[in-house]
Each structure stands twice: as C-alpha cells, then as structure tokens.
Amino acid sequence: MESASAWTTLSQPLKIAIVGAGWAGLAAAITATQKGHQVSLIEASKFWGGRARSIHTHSEDFPPLDNGQHILIGAYHKTLSMMQTVGIHLETAFWRRPLHLRYLDGSGLSLPNKSFPINLLQGIVFNSCWSARDKWQLFKTAWQWQGMNFECAEDLTVADLCQNMTPTVWQDLMEPLCVSALNTPAHEASGQVFLRIMKDALFGPAGSSDLLLPRLDLGELFPHAAIKWLQKNGASCQSGQRIESIVDLGSTPNEPKRWQIGDDKFDHLVIATPAWDASHLLEPFNAAWAATAHQLKHETIATVYVQAPLDFKLPEPMLALRTAQGSPAQFAFDRGQIYTEAGTPGLLAFVVSANKLSKEEVTLQVMAQLRALLIQLDQDAWQIKAFKVIQTVVEKRATFACTPHLKRPSARPCPGITVCGDYVAGPYPATLEGAVISGIQAVP
Image: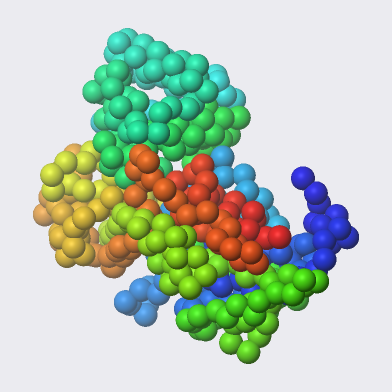
C-alpha cells in the first residue's frame, strides 16, 4: 500500500467530481483529497451521510434520531480508520463490548472479553442454554467451514450451510446473525457472502466480533466530521444540488477522457449515488452496466422509536428478540443506556429487518411485541399506555437482497468514471464497511 504522500508524488493531480455524499462518497472524497486531487463533492439532498444519517423528529422538543439504528463491529477496520482520519475518537464515539446476542430468557451467545479463539470456545462451551449436541454440531460445522476456507458453491443459501446445526443453535445464533448482517431471510441469503462475514468477524482476529454501539447520532458519528475535514483540506462540498446528467467531452491522443457536470469540467468522476440513480446517469455510456444496477432487488429495514417512562430500562442495552408472526422486530436497543450524552432516558429503538409490512402495520406489531415483552419482564401489560411511539422510520430500499447468484455492477463502467457504494461488486453485503471500502478503491 502506498501512502497518501507517495500518491501525491507519483500520481498526476486530477480534478475529480464525486456525486453523492453517503459514506461511500465521503470515503472517496477523503481518499482523493489525501492523494492531492482537486475534489468537488456534490450531494442532491440537504443532508450528508446518505442512508446512514441523523434525521429530525416530528417533535421540535426531541433531539435528532437516526435514519435507522446501526451497529458496527470490530472487523470494520476501514470504516473505523476513516473515522479516526477525520478526528473521531473511537473510545468516546462507541460503546464497545464483546459479541452479546442474548434473549430475555438468557439463551443466545455471549462471548467473554478474551482473544480469539479463546473467546469463541468459552462462549460456546459455557453456554448453559445449549445441550452437548447443540455445541458439538456447531463446533463440527465451524470446523467444516474452516476446512473449506470459508468458501462454498455460489448457489448455496445460509440455510443450506447450516442444515446440520440443531434447531436451537439455528434459532439462537445463525438466523439472527444472517438477518442482521445480510438483511435477507436465511433461506434466501447467499451462503458465500455469509461465510465471508463469519470469517472476518466471528473467526477473525481479537476484537473483530465486538459490537460497537454508537454513542453519537449518525450525523456526528462520521458525516459531519468528514465534511469539516474536507472543507478544511480544500475540498468543495455542495449540498442540495441534484445531478440529472453528465456530458462526455471525449478524449484526444495525448489527453484522457474528460467529463462535464453543469458548467464544470472534470478529469474523473466518482458516482457514489444509490444504484437506481447511478443506473440513470450511466445508461447513455454503458447500457449493460446500467441494466445490472437496475435489476438489483432491495430489502426494507424499519426502526420504531418508542419513548418509555424515564425510569424504564431494558435488561440489556441491546436485546435480541424472538421473531414470529406478529412479532417482527429482531432487536431492541435502549438508547437511553447507550446514548447517555443525548439525555434521552427511556428511548427505545426496535429494528425490523427484511420487513415487508407497511409503516402502520410494523408500528402496531412492534407495540404488541413490546406489550408481550413487558409481561416477560413481570410488568403489568396496561403500562403499555405509558409507552409512546415517537417515530417509525421505514427505509424501503435500505439494502440490496443478498441472494445466491447475485450479479452486482462493477466499479468501473467506462474510462474516466468509477462507481462506489455498498451495492458495487465486492465480498461484503450492504454494510457501512462495504461502502467505505468501495469509496477508497474508487479513487484513481
């Protein structure tokens, strides 16, 4: 890997336009600035951060929420490094703990704060809720995955990979891990991508599987600091400017291809928009690429924010939930415990992944799920009246459906243009880490 200073010396500085300021676009802008390029960052909305940003609530008296509750893990090395580049102190920005996927009855997997593989071995061996057969089948399957170098046939689903595991391990660990990582039901999700996630996280170096729960809203966690860093280092950052088309200025024998956006001319373009917008922009120059981007199917994620009485606390800051018909949320977060600096005691977030319900349906079902949770906590169900829905955020195209044989568009549709985003061809599903990596790699 060449350092930023080496790139500045060895590469010809370019005038680069980056269209889209989600986490991929921000990572591309930072990387391009480090390499000495002249950077123009252009965002269509008035907000920085794309689908991982803070939003204002319907109540003026309530602080900003997030456009969906996010979790990072210790294996997100590029994302965490990028945050440090723009001045984020990880120790204060995150509440970090070893992997802890516990249900209210104590089942699930919790790892001790030890190095791999001791943490994983102890977490499995000393799990009092799993039988000897549960543990043996998990060890046996994990050993097989290692023997396969965490690779499998392209047509296998996560359910295929886990068919020899017991129902208990499947329900307690594998199914929720799959839905939270790939946002795709396990019987439809790509086994190849799931194994890559397992290799890097659960079977990776010490700390890779740690959960990092943000103590800041998503805007403060990265996008706002990134914009300040970019402006301080000479980049132009424009919001509220939608790009409807780009113009090919052609090339000469001695000069590379150049592009025009509005009245400005550029040596290189980085398209960091969602897949459907990128498809529209690039269709005139590469129809096949645009068709590949356009055919991606997407999954929805809903987050229901509920204000509990100020003295209410969940048993854990992050609690895994049993899903069933009428109980759609997979996780509940006690943001009052996690985001102590925000001063919002009792604020809960219920996350529903791979959701096909309407906004009204998911809100009603989550409140019914909360009522059942209160009964499990030995509290009177009538107290549900004291719990108020603050806002339900439904991101209809939160991620692409990560299925077997999925064809994702390449990062290089034509000379002089690169594309970045969590949907671009790569080893990861639609995650912040995948977005950031693609942004870094998109810079010439």
